Length: 234
Image 1: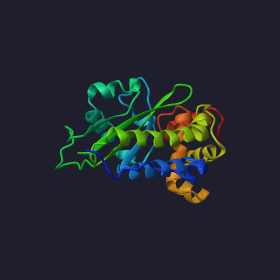
Image 2 (image 1 turned 60 degrees about the horizontal axis):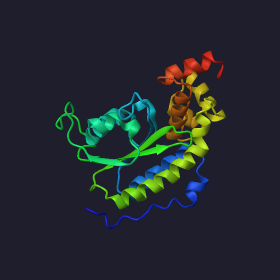
Image 3 (image 1 turned 120 degrees about the vertical axis):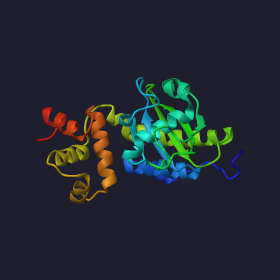
């Protein structure tokens, strides 16, 4: 069924002004809601991930405690074969989720049950593979709407690559990331760091996620250990 109300999403001046993760979080959130999706997750595709792992998620509005359920539901929605070969997908695919085994409706509320998932492969100029996954309770998109979504998502992703991803590939922490890692090493929580630096807790967590990824750490504790060992914080 065609979504007659669908029109292309216009980022306007917000895209030109986007320079940090909070800006891109807002852009992806606005785009996903424009196309009547509730959730989004931008992730890096690796050969070992099917379709990707929690550590590969770059930006999302999904709570950390629900990420594994989201990924499992996505995998079931797209089908085992498609999900396992996510690193080879070159065009958007979509699927409809159902209640997962192991997550009984009477025990655990599954907010992704019945969602339509749209998986959009993305590529950097160097050939690195990413994807944006949108999900929500809505009808399946037709090819015209998918084309509009793809064009809008590519615009945002290209700007994200230019402003943030290229810097992250160097493995160097920004001044703000190093500052937040230092406070983390002193035992401060994200909420406490947010108050100290005058930032939102979401922004602090975004910087920590970036630092964890750059340092190839498993979690915050590992991030601090690597940073101390390498003399990145004192």
